[in-house]
Amino acid sequence: MRPTLLEKGALSQRMGVASRNPLSQLPAPQHPKIRLYNAEQVLSWEPVALSNSTRPVVYRVQFKYTDSKWFMADIMSIGVNCTQITATECDFTAASPSAGFPMDFNVTLRLRAELGALHSAWVTMPWFQHYRNVTVGPPENIEVTPGEGSLIIRFSSPFDIADTSTAFFCYYVHYWEKGGIQQVKGPFRSNSISLDNLKPFRAYCLQVQAQLLWNKSNIFRVGHLSNISCYETMADASTELQQVILISVGTFSLLSVLAGACFFLVLKYRGLIKYWFHTPPSIPLQIEEYLKDPTQPILEALDKDSSPKDDVWDSVSIISFPEKEQEDVLQTL
Image 1 (cartoon, rainbow, N blue to C red):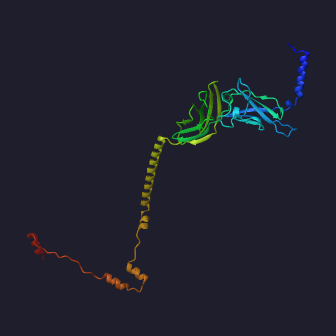
Image 2: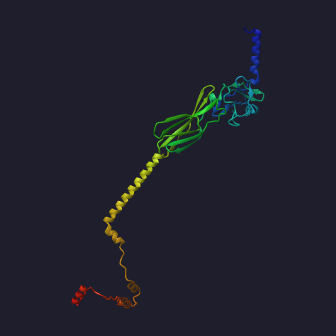
């Protein structure tokens, strides 16, 4: 049914009054946006600028769930105060990462500016669900331990999930030998991953990636890759055995070469070596003392040292001879 002329006039009068009402003359905040990164839930907007007022503009934020009424975003309701604030940001998770709106709830936010008795129109943002719209960052606190032909990777999840029966993380490892082709291993539910069957003493680079799975709506949120980091693997048991054998063979070969070289040098330069190691002739002690002090009677000392000594002899007695030998002796005499 079309409105009558009277109704049209009343409507026009109400619209004119509303247009002249100073309460509707405050501009609304512009470009509001919600940031959902890991566990963060932050609403931000551009400030309202007034050239004819020295008082600061304040802002009020409200929220509601799917079928609920609007609630003030204050300490009692959400754990943070976003009512009549001068900041152009409201961090719903400022109190703690576990604070904020439930991650599986449908949440709608609205915002307006206020200045004394003046206020702007409400600016309502599209609804969101944290698990549906979140930007997942890379895993945190990544530690890599080189092993025997392997790399052991440990890390923590991008953020904590209260109920892992509704949502959970799985992980992928992108790795490659330096200058080689990239490979992907996963998915893993564990926060500890071992890359096995790698070449020993080779440098491998890797990145770790998390993926959020929300069972309720069968939603996958692929996360960002971690920074590239490179590590060198250690030797495995077979490589260590090969090293021991090679070192032993090399040492034996080196000693054999050195021994052969020494033998060859001794044969070639034995005269020179004999000359080097030959003891030089020494001067008798008496002559050395005479050279130090010529006044000493060196000739008397030498004569004394060279004087004949008593001969030492043994006596032998012949007791008997055999007859034949006795005749030979007699003939000889």
